[in-house]
Amino acid sequence: MFNYSLWVTDYIHDLLRRTSRTFALSIERLPQPLRTRIGVAYLLFRVSDYLEDNYTIPAARKAELLCLWDHVLAGRVPVHRLVEELKQDTHDHNDPECTVAHDCAQLIRVLMGFPGPVRRAIVSRLRKTTRGMARWQLRGVRVETEDDLDDYMHYVAGVVGYLVTDLFANAHPLIAERRCELLPLSRECGLGLQSVNVIRGLKKDYERGWIYVPRSFCSPHGIEPADLFEPEHREQALLVVGQLVDKAERHLRAACSYVERLPRRCHRIRLSCMWPMFFAAATLAATRGREAALTAEVKISRAQVAVIVAKSVKYGWRNGWVRGYLDKLLAGSF
Picture 1 (cartoon, helix red, strand yellow):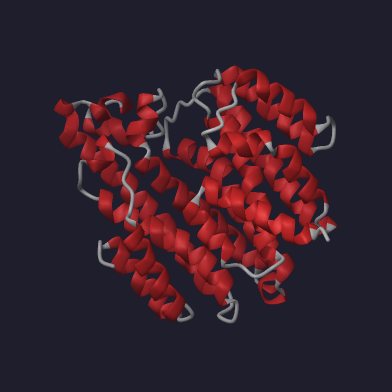
Picture 2 (cartoon, rainbow, N blue to C red):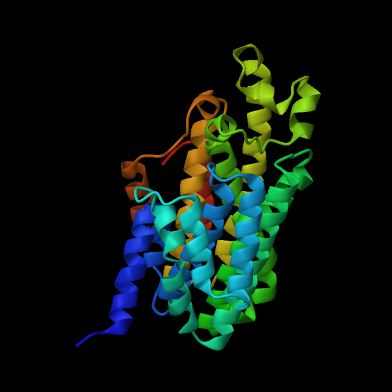
């Protein structure tokens, strides 16, 4: 006999593992039905990410597709319209994010089976992200100030923090009681993770013609953002990267305050938030004062991930340990 609930769980699990092992690890730690709800939400946000981040589609076309996706989410046009449009642009069977985008109709069907408050929260936050991404595509990636960078990161990651808190609050009354104090910090969680992504992807983004480093970070050192990757400007470039690292660290420390405010009895929820924060902190430490961020994409090893997971499972219910371990990771110690 066909078990639809089990099929959904397996389907979401498979897509998550193919798109991001680290986020899959965090989401799979969550209790049901929160695990499936956040898993579906994450994959739907990856559809927006794919449309925004695709380097083979021109910016104007990406904005058009993002607006179409927004209309699908609003219920104004059927989802098959977007699927047909995507087939005209690209379909790389080896790209998991492409697979997720082309499978958006199935994800929408699963979403429609969620309770009304959960479905509305996901759609509302996802539409905000999607419209923000479309605006940035039409504007062009010109990051003049730190406020510009924060605005961009808000739409691609800060809004996700809001949604995660919405879904946590819907699932657990103790978190619902703290929702108002958690929401501002949840945005910081998103900005922290995205700041580290910006640093990790500096070289790769530059090769695709995108630079997310604020001009205001570069001009005091007498260089332009495009000069960051020139060998003759390596000393100044490292100073700019240092500013980005300091910024990311500030956001991650605010993310730590978010984790500390989650009830200790919600250990699995706390772990799902701890792990991305800890992985980001360890990655950040690997870039501090080093040229690696300017020459390649920095990653931590699977062995390091395993150490972080094991220690946090054992000790992560203690707030003092969480903050102390974040300090250690930021200092480059596991």
